[in-house]
Image (tube, rainbow, N blue to C red):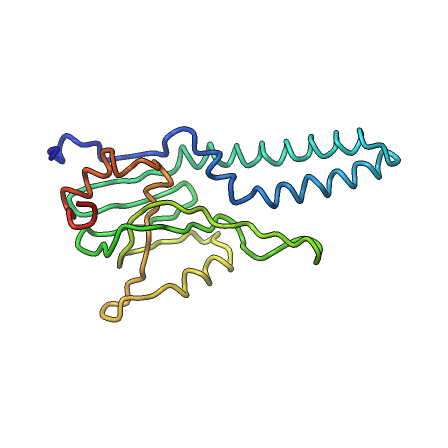
Length: 199
């Protein structure tokens, strides 16, 4: 087992995660493309080529905006491991921390990146699904930034709380930073301090 003093203590998202981030948005992006195709065709007097041009350009701009957000997220998201536990912080002001003894399990972590409320015409409503990854959960601490939207605050408020001390059930999506974390240095940290979680 590796000496914790020789293991890295800070981790940032590994490259290549943009596809995983965009996956929950795919249905919404397809709907947006179709709407722009229809509007673009109408704008160009029913010309299909004009509709395709408008749809491709506007959808490309939308993907570009998401990619810019993704790059900022990569730069600002940090996972910190120590003898005390694990902490996740990001550029928006989120902070989630879990002490080693307070982790209850390793398992799927669901991260809702956008309002899940369905949008679009009644016949073609779509919603943005969550990102799913493998991570750690337990009774911990959570600090949320003032800009957190109401729907997200309501979701967090509905999470279970420890009946003894009131701490919320929190989750840290280690797989959101590295899908192969169980086989790397993060996995070594977990095995050293909580060998019962991974074996």
